[in-house]
Amino acid sequence: MAGDIRHEAAAALEAAFAARDRGSSGDLPRVGLFGNGIPEVVIAAVGACPVHLSLDHGGQRHEVDRVVEPFVEPETRIFLNRLLGGEFADYRGIVFARDDAAALTAYQYAREWLRQRPADGVPPLFLWNFIHTDSGPAQAFNRVQGGKLAAFLQGVGLAAPAAGWADAVADEGARRAALARMQALVGRGISGAVAMCWRNAGRFIEAGRHARLIDDALPPQGVQAGRRIGLVGSALGSAAVYEALEETGTIVCDLQPWGAVWPGPEVAMPDLDTLLAGMARNPYSPRIVPPTAHRAALVEALVAAGCEVVVCQLSQHDDSFGWEIPSLAAELEARGIGFINLGFRDHEPDAEWCAAAAARVAGEGVPA
Image (cartoon, rainbow, N blue to C red; front, side):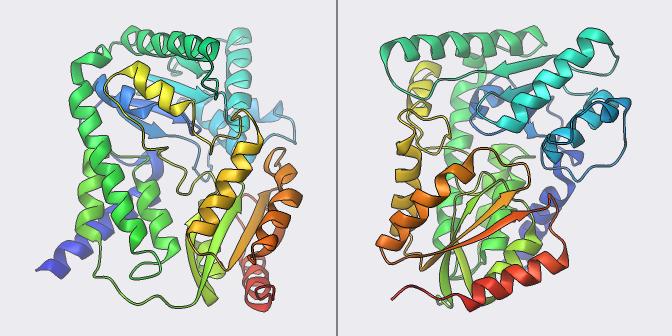
């Protein structure tokens, strides 16, 4: 019986991840998100399901495709085609994270296109602009932004955050506790690929349901086998790449944007202001002040996870993480942790790239 429950829950998580935002969020109204660092508990508190929109594989083409410059990230191009093609017409609104380069570009393109050519089937758009430092002026700015987000959500017909705050916080807490239990089994019962899939399934379904499915899906603890691998770099949601990298070990510390940096840091959530103050100190934000705090947090987490080797991979359009590589590699190697930079990869890496990556990881050992 327990095995049947585990199988059904795992299948539900895999189905949610495979369907992405094209799946079902139940009867709740949906609010789209693009990028990490948006206070999703606020959206849940107003009675909606936050659904991420930037991990789709593409499909239809809209005329906007002709004017998007070639250096723009594939996820931005795919999103714009879908947005202006009316695929998100049933969403109450879409929130973009200013922290995310792809999200900011998508917001700017969409607003300018709509300014010149108003279109039906496009929900209201909101840019979540947030400062990642805890100075007094920054906190005041962030409180204003929190108020603007709440006003935007009420403006599209949703409730005030206070209405459902306690339930939303409880569901989010349950999700984070379930994710912590899952992470403790990575390498001891589940692979990094499975953990990535189960974690990111929660970007498309309600937090409470996500927590229940993870807890139901967790297997008994096994024995650690293979090398302990860390993963950094550009946002990556390809199970095929994970499986290739895990031919000789397990990705036990996943710190790329689709990894364990979501749903964000453990912070107190008695009210919106306290939540925002905690979020401002999140060192995994690429816009944290001072910037060195981001690299220091990565190193600390990779060391704490007992990683023997760290693998870095980059989108062809990366313009941020690549700057971290020399210092990050040096700091890790000084602690006896190997660093493998796989360089640039396509948006959807093919079998040839995966095979070469697997061979590279298998062939490079840990420094003496």
